[in-house]
Amino acid sequence: LYPSVRFEELEAEQTKVVTDLPGGDLEITPVPVSHLVPTMGLVLRQAGSSVIFTSDTGPTERIWEVANGTKDLTALITECSFPNSMQNIADISFHLTPHTLALELEKLERRIPILLHHLKPPCIEQIRNEIRGLQNPDLHYLEQGKSYKL
Image 1: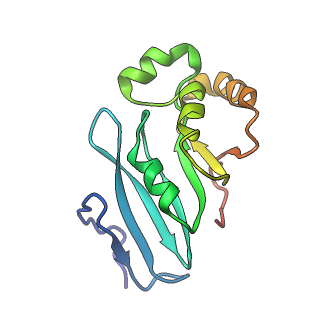
Image 2: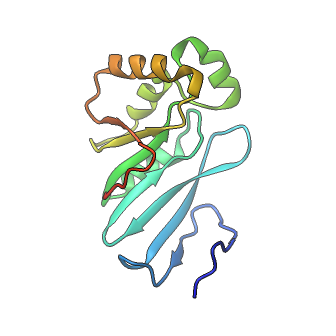
Image 3: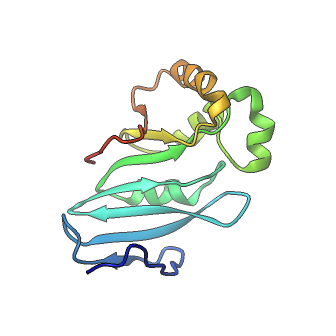
């Protein structure tokens, strides 16, 4: 019988393995990202493929270095919280706009699906219009209730 929640402290770039999961063991490696409070993105590896979740982040470096060194990377999940017109707020709170997202994605050395989340509700339509303007076919949105096989 498994507990509903079990908390374990994670250290930057130290891999933890969760065993006995459907689909095999899950490796979790936290990677520091730039945010107002100390925050980690995650490299999640299971059954020979990896996905990176940047978590909340502003422009950052290490997560992209790790992404470029992760040979089995199949997708990346990142945020885009504010529209370009709110760049100042995004900068102060260490979040991304479509403009800064595009600059961050230039650091990624391969094409993979990029799944976006954390769009601020009052700004969703404007953010989506600006993302569309980037004309990047790799950009998609996470959808609540949808299952993903990556």
